[in-house]
Image (cartoon, rainbow, N blue to C red; front, side, top):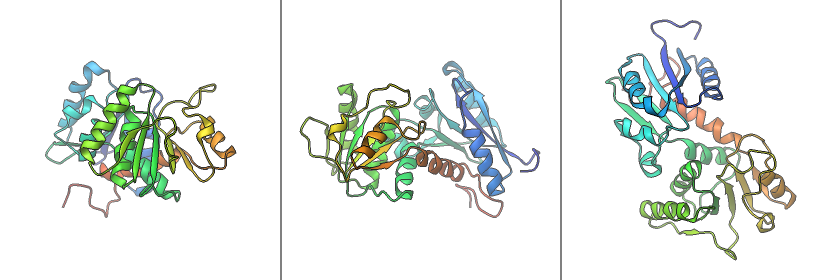
Length: 274
């Protein structure tokens, strides 16, 4: 894009607050690299105005789509005309594409980006036993993406047991052949440990897992991007584990978002078009 014109596709990110978002900068760079005539802008939307703003965006014929982040990922599901199976299972959407007829199609790419990031860095989750720490929004998305990727078993550990139980129940319903359980003392050592909590974002946070449970040969992965080396990853390295940083999840997800919302080069057909 050299200048904004009447041909420029418009994209947005909806958040509250919105000052901290970095997605527009990264997706604008992606569009420039792909030669796509588009621009993304941050839009500050409170929960009470979400439905009104989405209805207005839906009416914009130049809209390519929008990204949704905190606190709107759950509420946006009901405002879409169609959502992916992954989004139905997770109960959240973080990326929406506007079709030519005005229909809004939503997907959740957090977990898919995490799995793609692991694979890009040479860590294959298929056939592995996984311990997932957390049962919140990010952990939910990662859990269903791991199940879809063919993990051999999934254990869930969360401070609020009711959340762990709810996630385990929904996973078992969607993937009845997948062994799903709640992490208990003395459980068999997993192949992969994933921190899906926010513990590690702030200096001084407690570890999300007792480091004495980590053993050489395990893979320990993060969803946290900053700091790059969290306290958990540092402890895992000290115990001889392989570590996987959080940034590849974002990098892979950005590529997926670009593809999903049609941020393609002029010679490529956008999604949903023939």
